[in-house]
Length: 128
Image (cartoon, rainbow, N blue to C red):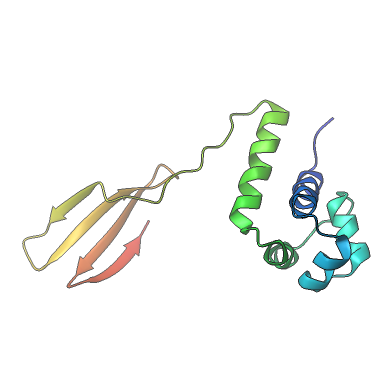
């Protein structure tokens, strides 16, 4: 049986809340969502919008990217897929001189595309 995304998200939200020894009531008030709806989200019975997830994560002081990364890892383990690896921030891998005051910074991206930032006197323009 396939694991539903809403169930995996709900499980991680509940774990974060219980690890903090907080009640549904406390988190629902902080997130400005009804207690019943938060309970349904935690049990994987309701889909949470991106805005609602952000609000719940704020109430839990849990960065949304951390929640989503943990959920992705949980789903990967459950389905036997490769576990995603959190990449470090992009680093400049090369600097190409253009023969003028401007330069081009090259940086690899996780999308296997080349990210390019064109710099001119401390101003950067990014492109992917």
